Length: 118
Image (cartoon, rainbow, N blue to C red; front, top):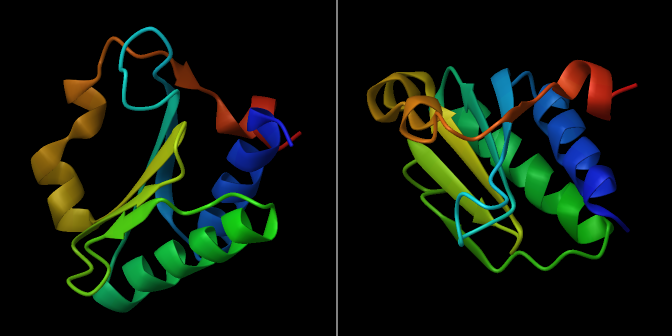
């Protein structure tokens, strides 16, 4: 079970629930919190929860422990902590407001289409 496998599984889980603008940031050497951030958003509270639930289930199926999941009930910004991988599932409005991609602008973005889903 390598990182590419969990990255691919999480991206596919988000995509299956129609998450929008899925971004994978390589945080190695940039953040001590995690090696990768995955950022995506849904357009409703129910969709945000469905995306988060699917990611959690897929990670557990691969044997990853979900160390923490915060914000699920509010469904505005759900954070899923898998240790070396942190997933941020935003409601569309909150994603625009917090703009994590700009905050971590020095982190290289992984092209999920060509590198992970091929």
